[in-house]
Length: 193
Image: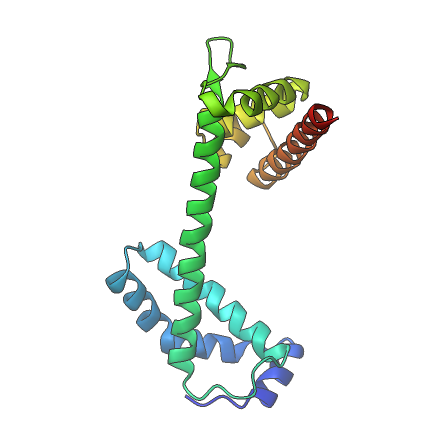
C-alpha cells in the first residue's frame, strides 16, 4: 500500500479517517502477531501498541514530519516496537521508583510510615522522607501509602478511596507526590542552611 501523504493529510484534517481504517485492516493483524510472537507481550498489549501506532502515524502525517513513507508495514511495525519498548522502560522506571520509596519507608500497624529501614549512609535522607510525609494531608498520605507501600494499582485505590474515576486517583496521586517532593526539598534546604 502506498500513501499519498498530502491527500492523507487533507483527509485527516477534514475528519475523514477511512485511510486509518484501511491501514488498520491491512496491517493490524501482522503487527499484533509480530509483537506477540517476538516479544513477551499479550494480545491486548499488542493491540494497544498497534492502536497507539495508528494514532502516531496520523499525527506524523498531519504535522508533516515525514516526506515519504515507502513501506507502510515496516514503518508501522517500527512505531509499534518503539512504543512497546518505551512502555517497558516506563514500567521499569516506575517499578524502580516504587522499590526505592518502599526501601526508604516501613509500614507499621497504624497504616502510617513511622519507621525507617535504616541504612547507615541513608539515615538522614530517610528521616527527611518520613518527616516530610507526615507534613502531608491525611488524603495524600493515604493515597501515597496505598500506592507505594501497599502496592495497589490505581483502579484499586480509586475504589478503596471512593474516587470518581481512575484518572482522578492518578491526578491526586501525582499532585500529592509533587507536594511531598516539594516538602522534601524544603527539608533539604533547611539542612543546608
